[in-house]
Image (cartoon, rainbow, N blue to C red; front, side):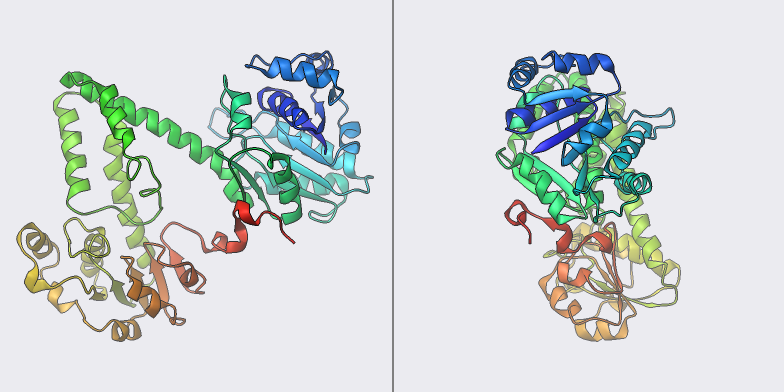
Length: 454
């Protein structure tokens, strides 16, 4: 393909060379004459392993060139990749003036162009940026989005020092767009690379780089806090974390990475508190670890706030224990929610087949007696009857019997803490605790197996 790349900095230079090496003809565009001259002389604009060899070879072969004439570059290409900087302002927002200027230049360039054009944003941007870029291009070109041009978000996940290696060995390639043909065309650029190609909702693609890097920062901070505590105890922190990383079933997995309700049970709250106390006694500051409990409390408050949007309604809780398949009520966040709502005068019924009050013993019984001493008056044994009698159904545990019952519910509000089933999400009166029904359609997420679309 013929591709233009706007911005010959770190991402732009690597993309320029690697795309050319993969068989494409690539024109680099930059306002810096020095960068343009470097590329045209077969030299990279950055210091990065292997990129000097790639740029030199591809320039000799005639596969790459550079210019500061945006109109000519767009006229000669079918895809324009935007890879200009998006620096932070003092307030933490992104300075998008460079992206917006490129968008204006692309719009002016395609004004008299007959061929359909694709603008693919490679820069790191926040959700909503692609829509703004599309508006600018529409205004400058007089053409309509998805008729004369399309917008694609194609975030990069390159690390300085290993960018070329990362380019050719991605764990995945992400393409976001509201135009399937454009998304597939951009995806075609990466078909020969390993890793799954994922075509997703535009806003999902826009936020992914921030989610990734925030988590990477969290991992480093968490490891450092663990290391600080271990150091005070004379424990080898590297051995601790090496063992931690060997658990691929829970520690390094997707098991706990499903947005939903707060955690509970006997282990997590107790052991988190124990580690916090240990750090406190050692006079070690652990703000990341200390913030975990606060985030959990916020999630409980969020659940209560959502339910309180429906005052004077009869509430039916589907599940009360801290997770499905257990009668453990200790530190169950749902117990906290019920306790708070009862204090505000709510009418509540609860169905949980796993709870038998006569079988509750020890700390489990003590906990529920302290929180909801009259739980027996709230528990019901007939699920379908409770559903009929309730105005709002709150799904707290992921039990299969709940799915079957809720599939037939059309006249109740469903508040879901666990994302129980995709078919129920389509219910008109459905609310997920922290996911939007606007982006749950299967049409917005296509795996690599489905990227050839008709």
